[in-house]
Image (cartoon, rainbow, N blue to C red; front, side, top):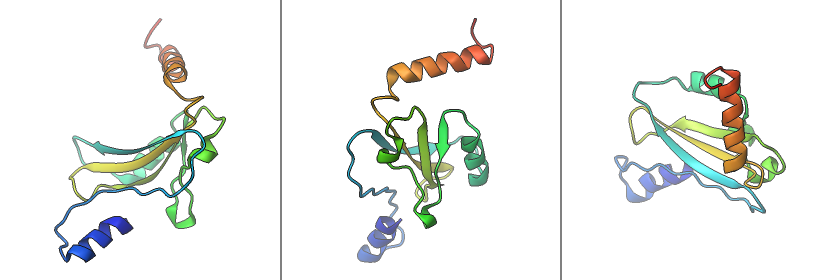
Length: 127
């Protein structure tokens, strides 16, 4: 958010719309994504966090005030995806920004395919 506010301050224009995520950490392995999601309907951030916290394979780490958010070094050796820095996108209506990290050697196409197949089987969506 500092980048957003600094842009408005430097340019002297509060109407400039910027969305940004800045990460300042060394990464030995893993992948990270800044994700922007636009919903069809309005949403509640508390409900989004609640859903993510109950989703199998997702670890919610979303407390920036206490420096708790996903970092690649903490995902090392784990199959879960770590999600945090959840906030409204102030430049688009009904949009959400979040940060996702995972161990790219453990959480990739093959692991995802197995986990999705397992989920579909458990829910009786495939036989």
